[in-house]
Each structure stands twice: as structure tokens, then as C-alpha cells.
Image (cartoon, rainbow, N blue to C red; front, side, top):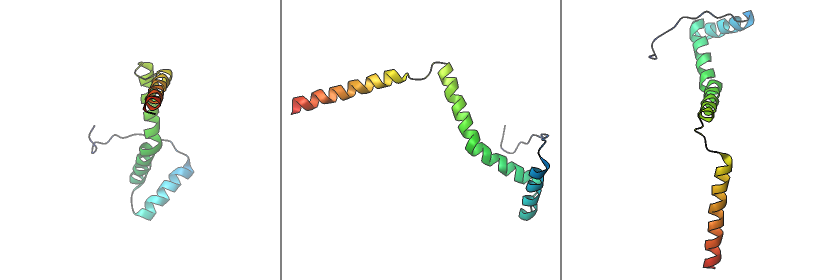
Amino acid sequence: MKDNEKSQISLRLPTRTVEAFDRIAQLLDRDRTWVMSKALDQYLANEGTEILRDAQGLDELDREESVDLDDVLEKARMIVDASDVRHRRAG
């Protein structure tokens, strides 16, 4: 979907929330839809992005596309051990 394409939705919100959106819209000389769209954009850019990133990581785990932590630790141990051996030989 292109950025300029729009979809209409229906949304039920607490009256106090709608009143807050209306007040902000009035103060900014914008309509309620614009204010709600900006609020949703902010949510998606922050918390929404984190949720999607977590879901992607879980999907990768389900597809076994991840690296096992024990394998990473074992490789790190091997690197440290090899470094220790080189340092002892050098000196």
C-alpha cells in the first residue's frame, strides 16, 4: 500500500479520549482524524516497532534460524583459550 492510500475504519473509544483528541485538534486548528493519525504514527514508531521486532525474532526462532547461545559461548571460550595460548607462547 502506498503512503497516500487511505482506509476507513470504525473505532470505539472512551468519551474522555475522544474529547481530548477534539480539544487538541481545536488547539492545533486540525481535524480529529489528523490528530488521531499522528498519535497512531507515534505509537507504531515506538511501541509498535518493538512489538513487531519481537514477533520477527520469535518467528525466526520457530523457523530455527537463530543461533544457540551454548554454541556462541563455546566459540567464545575457544577464542579466549586460543588467545591465552598465544600469549603464553609469546611470553
